[in-house]
Image (cartoon, rainbow, N blue to C red):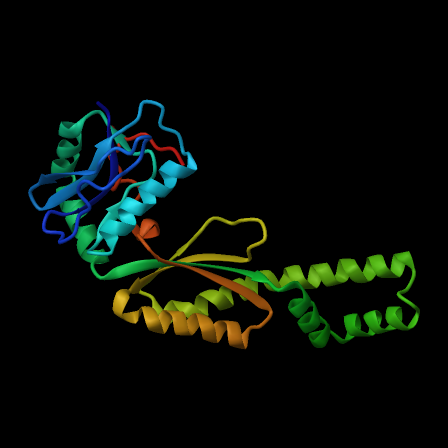
Length: 252
């Protein structure tokens, strides 16, 4: 039976969710494979494993349950091994790496922050800072909206001015929150976002991080800032060594 891997923790982790329902329909019970100072959270894998919503949520729930009690190295959805002995073999081969990463994540969580422009607020700010555009907009207003060509020209210049702010505003988000975190990881670009960062935050510093986000929203009202966390520290696990490279198959 193929073994599905949720994550790796220390063998002395105080609250590993053994017996909890995992992926599959019906849900496969989670079991713990211990080897030396390490433990792998695993279950049997369905033969037709796909990234369905139910299984994605089940994977996340197992990691959330374990992560609430101590550090866990989260595997990506779809990490598989041939069988339980293959998982134990990986724990043995990569013991030093896993133990070092667990120590580095002790008492820490990930917060993902995405930011976008509030359309009306950023347009107001762009006009306030650009006398030429402001004069053009005022002239169009007095002319009953202006001709089609005038509207088009104003729209193009406003769009260019807003886009020109994106890189600077994204960097501003990072600079405002980075002092409250131990590490920062830049996430993939996405439609509609000008910033996508993950921050590694000590749990005892979480209130300070959340307060910094609130201050950022207050001082930069033209930004729509959204936070997701605390999360398992996906962005701060070495994606090469922390996956069973020969035995795992990823699906996201």
